[in-house]
Structures are given as C-alpha cells and as structure tokens.
Length: 134
Image (cartoon, rainbow, N blue to C red; front, top):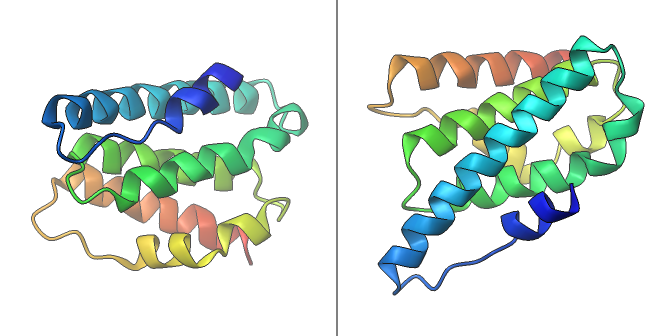
C-alpha cells in the first residue's frame, strides 16, 4: 500500500507531455489496483484492516479527477473506487471523508459526451455515497 501511495502522489510537469501521459497511465493502474484490493476485502467481509488507507485512496481520486487532461478511463476508475469504498463502509465509517467538498462537487458533475459506462459508474458512486452518508 505504501508503494501505491507514493506512486499515486507523483505530480508531472505539465509541459512534459510524455510524463503527463505516463502519470495518467500510472494513476489508472493504481486506481485499478485499489479497486481490486477493495473488492478482495469486500468478498472476505472485512473492512477494518483497510480503513487506515481510505483517505489515501480518496486522495488519489481527488488528484485524478482534478486533472484537466484526464482520460475517461481514469474518471470511470476513480468513480468506481469511490462507489466501492462507500459500499464497503456503508454504515457511516467514512462519512466525513465522503462528504468533503471536492467529492460532493465531483459527484454532482454532469459528464457531457461521456460514454454510457462512465455515466453508469458515476450513478453507482452517487447512490453508494448517498447510502453511506445517510
């Protein structure tokens, strides 16, 4: 988890297009890894061991969603992870993190021209966060 955290914190020089592309691919891979980890904990019906890492995972989602030149695959992966975390901690354990301003704003966006799959994942994230923060 430490290696994923460190890799997710890399900030590219916006003038270095190759580095920007590399970091986008890296973030997508890290998001996918986090999704797999969360799915594993969910299938084992264990959430407590993962709790210390939730803020780090959501921090990567925040960075990924704030990038102006983000590919749709990153948007979909970030919202999928947000939804999965909200679903895993549906009893309010991470309510404070799920009600932060950046996340509320991200969930309210209306992705124009986004593929149907991205819209579906965004809807899933919205519904999962709503249930986890009720």
